[in-house]
Length: 207
Ligand code: ADP
Ligand code: TYD
Image (cartoon, rainbow, N blue to C red; front, top):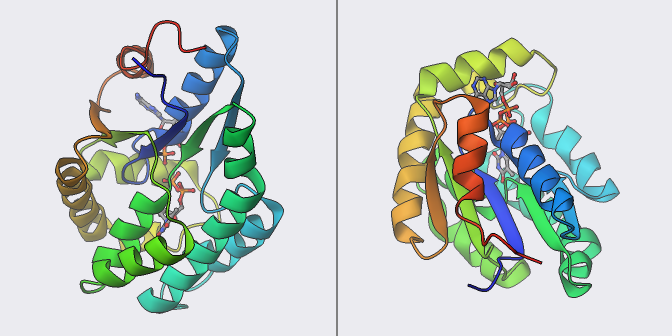
């Protein structure tokens, strides 16, 4: 089994992606695997600036089309400055959200813009993860967890339960579409159980 080098976590808000990405990073580092933990939107200084533009403020601040451009611009910077150089130097990259989130949030939430997302992705990113963990979770539980965190990055959480439900269904469809790289993980279990399940999908000696 060739160890996957570029691993992403996807799922609705509050599903436990950040928690599990952190735990996987710690588990691989403990095995001596050179490993980088990052996230989107953000992951590089320029992309972090764009993160503030897209996650703060009024829910109607940007159209879905403008968001596709902003998220893809952030991703391009992240790819150029962190992801590609890390992979080239032999490191494993663990990323909390990537292009599948744009396929869902910008591609599905306000009309069907998936073809535009995919076209821009092909033109400007052109890279898919080797392995994607979809942390699947009941939308109401995910929303309650996300809201309990509190913060100012709530543009998308403001869209509410309907959006969470549509995104959950959309992610499950995406997992079927890209079944070669997606693994669906039941996120409604204690953190340790979820972490052990995730680790079981990686080779025991991924160095
Ligand atoms: P995401 O990155 O998908 O939005 P987080 O990892 O930030 O999710 O988790 C959202 C909240 O739920 C956090 O407060 C976290 O501590 C909590 N949480 C994460 N995993 C679990 C779990 N398996 N069971 C219960 N609570 C969890
Ligand atoms: P994130 O910080 O991962 O939030 P959470 O931990 O609550 O899941 O992502 C913030 C929001 O950004 C999230 O609601 C999804 C949204 N998003 C998009 O709409 N498109 C994208 O391409 C990405 C990467 C995120």
